[in-house]
Length: 396
Image 1 (spheres, rainbow, N blue to C red):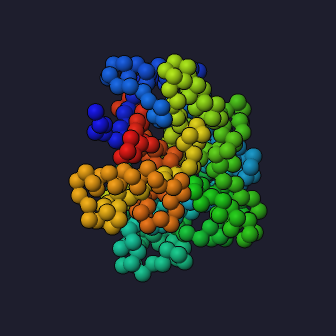
Image 2: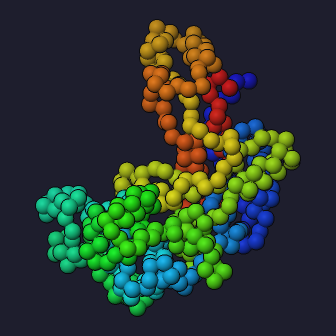
Image 3: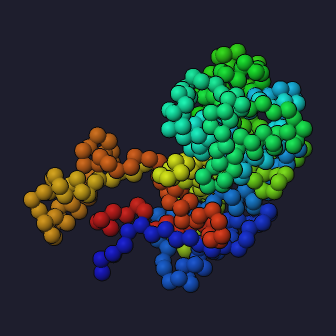
């Protein structure tokens, strides 16, 4: 009988994972048990994805604010530090900022406006237009910001982040000065020691600051990129991708995940005789149309994946074929013609009109986004996602 479904994404319930657990075996057991209970079959080229959060937890990859403070002091001197372009997030940045503030005498906090890198707004574009402010050139002190725009609460969290971050810095014993600007070179009017906290634009920001004469430029990816007093660390991303664990600790992005995904793949092959692709995923790469927030606060969607997940989709647009190449066909003749076109498609459709409108993003970004939406970020209890049929097409 002809299959009547395409891609299926399932959240897989797992035991609560703790530090030191054999996460590879837990993942494999959980997927196989789910298949047995729910009466579905595993197939070659299914994808099993594991959220980075439980991987880091199993690794015990945690660090305290004191470890952050020590590394900041070691790398930036402990005096006046310019902290620029952080995202507005209690979960992502507040504990990091506590550690940064404990490693300095004064923090000059420079915020992007009207919104941060991932879309959390301090003010709206309409407010800027009404006030005659040019965000590309104008620098606003905290006083000027308040004079023009008053109190602005985040629409989802209800937090005034300018006040929240300022109070947090001062509570850690450091002096705080807050400005709003979008040119990284502005911070050099206040200090020549800079910690840039942007995620996806970090290398450009470092380059601009160094060219402008900054004495010391360090990114969040350079803080805790090695252990401090036996703390957790991430050699490649440092504090990027970290999340709040407690008020005084962060859980870092997981370290060295390629061995894990290959181990999981081998266990599936041994136990089920199926070649399963495996990935670790974090934030999805999509934007909320109402809040304008871009979800991707992690440095990458997937820090590790098996080789079969490399590349981008190679697909034809069915509606283009139906409306153009086979506009005179209907019913079974149309279906057979489209199936024939799919079977005969080349391996590289770049520039082919019949592929326009398909999504030329990396497979790991697409599948990771699907997994993030499936697992959610709350109490679903499904840190493992099974995606089936992703690589199928109409002819399968």
